[in-house]
Amino acid sequence: MGVWVRIGSRHETNLERGYTHFLEHMLFKGTSKRTSKQQAEEIERVGGFVNAATSREYTYFYAIVMKEELRLGLDLLSDMIFSPLLSPKDTKSESSVIIEEMKSYEDNPEEYLSDKYMQNILPNSSLGLDIIGNFDSVSNATADSIRSYYEKYYTPDRMIVAVVGDYDEKMVSDLVESYFGSFTRKSTPTPIEVSPIKSFTKHLEKRKLEQINFLLGANGFPKSIENAIYLNLFSTFFAQNTSSRLFQTIREEKGLCYNITCFSSSYTDTGIFSISCGTSKKNFAYALESIIDEIKILLKDDGIKKEELDDAKSNQKGGLSIGFELPENKMIDIAMQEFFYGNYYSYEDRVNLIERSNLERMEEIVKEIFDLDALHLSAIGDIKQAEFKNLETKI
Picture 1: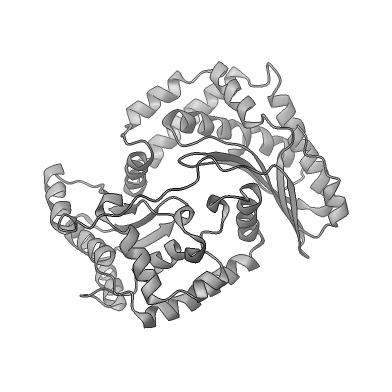
Picture 2 (picture 1 turned 30 degrees about the vertical axis):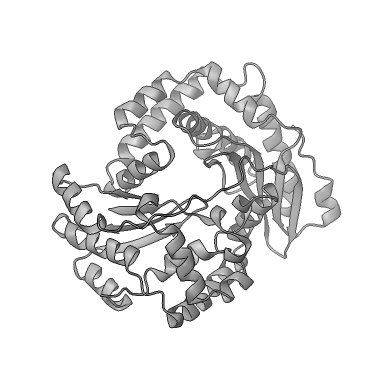
C-alpha cells in the first residue's frame, strides 16, 4: 500500500530547495502517537517495512506487510502523513543527516554526474535542480519553515492511495476512508513553468578518476501512455538490453565499456532521452564517436528493422507479465497511471497497445528524439578541457 503526494522538487521556490526531500525524512521522525522508534518497531515486529522516495514531481510513502496486517499498514501511513511531529530538535538533526547524504552523492561520480546532467540540460528550470537541495537551503531549514511547507502541500486533494493484495474492494475502500477520510485541508494550486528550454551543450567536471562517465542527452516526450509504450520499445532494442544495438556494438564488438544503457525521463510537460556510458580515457573519444555512428545508422530510412520492433514487443509483454507478479510493482503502476494519465490501463490494455505499435510511428519517434544539431554531453573524469571541447557531438 502506498500514498502518493503531488509535490516534488520542481514545485519548490529558491528558499525551499530540498524541502520536499527534507519533509520525506521528517515524516519518519515520529507522530503525535508514535515515536520514530515505535514507528519502526510496529512494522518490523510483523516482518513488514515502510519506505519512501522523493522525485521531481511527486513524493510517495509505502508499506509492505502480510495480508493480515493491512490495518496496521494503513494506520502507520495515515499517522505519519497527517500527524507528524516536525519538531525543532528533529529538524536540526535531520538537516545534518541530509547534508551527509549530499556529500555521499558528491563522492559518487555516477550520482554526481546524474545531478549535474539535469542542471546542465535544464539550466533555466527548477526541474533541473537537485532533488536533495543545496547546502544553504537545507542547513537553514527550521521547524517552522518545514511545517509551513508541509501544511501548504500535504493535503488530501493532492494525494493518491494505492493498495494491492488479496482483499475485497469494498473492505479496502472502507478502511481507506476510515484512516484517510477525516482530513479535509485543501492546498492552493502551485504554478510551474511549462516546457523548460533544454540546453544541448557540452559540460565537463574534471576529476581524477580511472574512468570517464558520460551522459548524452536528446529530445524526450511528456508523459502519456502512447509515449511510454514507444519509448520503452525503442529503449529495449537500442541500448537497454544486452542484445540491444549499443550494448552489442560498443561493449561486445568493440570492447569499449563495461556497461552502456539508455533511458527516457518523462514529466508532465516535457522529457529527455539519455544514453549513459562509462569508459577509459583512451577509449572515450572512440566510444562517443561509435555511439553517434549508431544513431546515424538508426536515422536512415531503413534504419530500424521490423524484427527489432517485434522482438521488443515480445520483450515488453514478457517484462510486464513478470513484473506484475510482484505486488509492489502493481501498487506503483496503478498509482503512477492515476497520477499521470488519470486512467488505469490494465495488463491486457497495455498488451493491446504494444501489439498495435507500428514501424512507421517508431521511425517518427526516433527522428523526433534526435531532431537536433548536436547531442548534449555531460561528463566527469580526468581529461583536459581543451580536449573535451574538441569532441564532436553532431548527428
